[in-house]
Length: 317
Ligand code: ACO
Image (tube, rainbow, N blue to C red; front, side, top):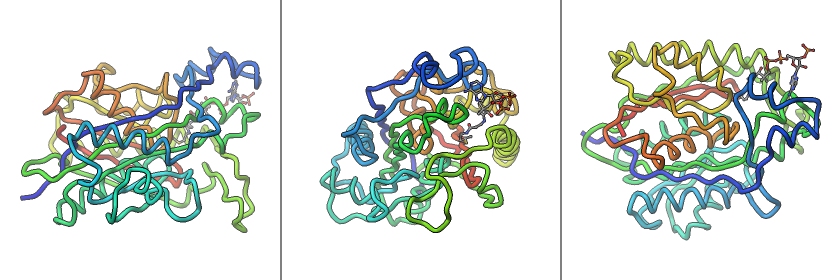
């Protein structure tokens, strides 16, 4: 039997940070309010010279190096982003060129904050069916350029960065289960427009925060309960929950549903903010590089985002 497993991971965050104290000078808000409602204390903001591709390349190089592979070994690139550098070609092609890789399939996927778990799920399918041996999955977002820095309800949340991993073929699992969902009826609760489309909506992020919060808690609660049931997992079996880092209250509610103590949850939201499709990959890389996540650990990765989209990956590291 052929399976896929996490080989190496990588991450990149721009050096520039905007703290809650900085935001107090820009909009009517406070460090206390932001910390209490979101758990975010700072967000990373790309400099002018940084791009979705440059951040993806920095994270991808680390993931390939950690896998003890060379760029030429990569057989497919899947890049999740809602903030591509060009409408076309896909940022995955720009990344392929930046890494000096020749002639492998490379494509973008757009699933907002769920992009990384969508990407892992697609990569897993290609590996299991023997169509690729090493797939580079990257989530990269330069989302702060879609933020209206005068809108206190959204500018406190979002952050730039990239998370990456190499998924490789192996004889034992690896990825044990994947589960993806989408419901386009909620498209108007969280969106940003395309400047040249006739959709006529703002290019800045628009969000009904309270409704998004409620839907995220409900969808993720049902999702993790279902994953645990279908895979006969009791709460002690999961070593780490690696959630999308949007809001500490959403994460706490999901951990509670699973009966997991917060010590078993990788938390980066305080320092990383919400990096959308990069967030789960960045959190995984953080857990690996800080030595929290060890080989053999059972990881439940999950995400929820615009669409709405949501999903999970259960994987033995
Ligand atoms: N500082 C101070 N006050 C604020 C701020 C702010 N930055 N933003 C909003 N407020 C005010 C509102 O104007 C409102 O005031 P009012 O009662 O006088 O009208 C009050 O605070 C309460 O507003 P709510 O929107 O109801 O506040 P809530 O407790 O829901 O928190 C938040 C807002 C943090 C946005 C929350 O709804 C949330 O996190 N939602 C999830 C959104 C999210 O994570 N989106 C990311 C993409 S999807 C995902 O990744 C899951």
